[in-house]
Length: 299
Image 1: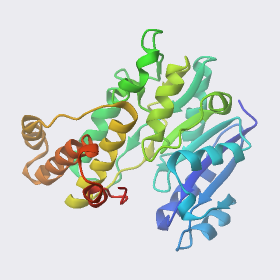
Image 2: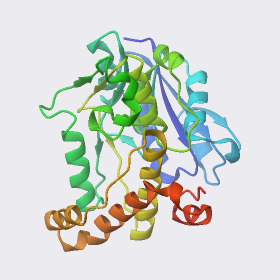
Image 3: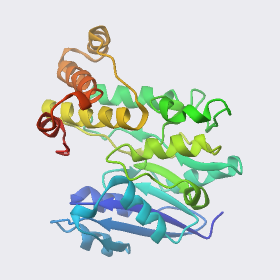
Image 4: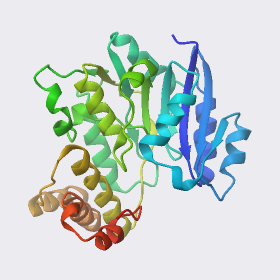
């Protein structure tokens, strides 16, 4: 077990959930010193004070200098731990053993660079979100035990084109990185999907990843229809940019999903399908249209 492990969190206007996340991170039962490290990019609420109240080291940066990959590289450089567990400001460790379980994944083999756990839906999560999360993460460990992923040599040169597959999934909302591996393959300074790209490049470099099904965080979103469409636009646009993946438009899949989740789920599934379809083809759209469709306002 490592002597120091870092829990790193990028923050901007974390609100009440940030207090919950930091309290849960501080309560971890693990055979190591836990360092809390927060990078705040211009919060207008009490996020900085909240982080310091929980004993976190806080780095404050200008909002214009934030990027998903670049800021996490900076957190990695500043971290004291040989392993750095990443959360987001709205991803709460589900119990006091979350961190210990992520770290235990590195004991599976010497070549493990990444460990990742599932998201559990929050109590207010809509039914389709609950089902999508359950099915997505169940596919990674059908037997309910930790699952190690490596790529065959023939797969490694094309790892980026395999990103949408569950076997290559990694999330910096609930994932841990070995510093030694990151020094070899850092985050790329991309607009979005920096975690998926990191996993693909580490696996492509011959490292392994372990999915730990009992290292869960509470993490789900409840978007109104238009915001959901825009969020899906951003996510699938990023997958296209980093992997070349193009989402097909399948009305039959929408009908089947609505049949599974009930008629009230229709807005969720339609906006998901349309957002993913448009995001996969964002390069064909005018810049002003891309900006309007993006939840982050990215042209």
